[in-house]
Image (cartoon, rainbow, N blue to C red; front, top):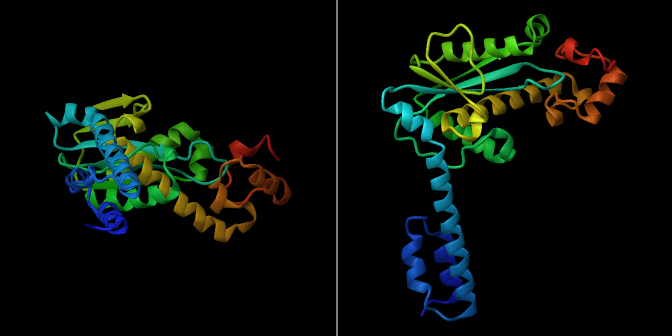
Length: 252
């Protein structure tokens, strides 16, 4: 008979596909330690199945448009609210057999999970691209129009031309493709969720670079958003080159 420790190791290292057979094999074992490990393994398996179903539900829009289009593109932006730094948008086109778990609105994910998914998205997508609108553009034409510029730029940089756009809530002016604006799309579409993650990670990386140039503002921690630390530094040191003058005029 296998020891409890041996069974624990088997269950902990089994793939999700292997777990059902191992759970069946050990579930009649009446030792308390085995019961505990089998229960833990069953919980892990149930969570995995629930995640598969959640992602399937997030493919509803993709399945709808994959019937008629090969290149369905998800688009999202990040950085509309900060006091400093650019606004960035990402566009992602997935293959129809995409099988990525844990995609979600980037704000719902930990930094570690975003970084993991960032690499997986890039490896899985047919094509992806990121667009950017700088602070000068934001101050000149307003954040919404700058956001549209970043989105159009991302679309234009894709290696294949998308046939339909799934957007997070907005309708982008001056694009040729049909568009589907989806309220809270980053929680309802895997393509939009992936774009949300790409844009977030790219912008966070850039803000960490700016943190090295302007260390007094804490950009690596606040990413340009109006934290108490950031506002205090802004009042103490004044604005730097990447502060949005139209956003901070009432703060300094």
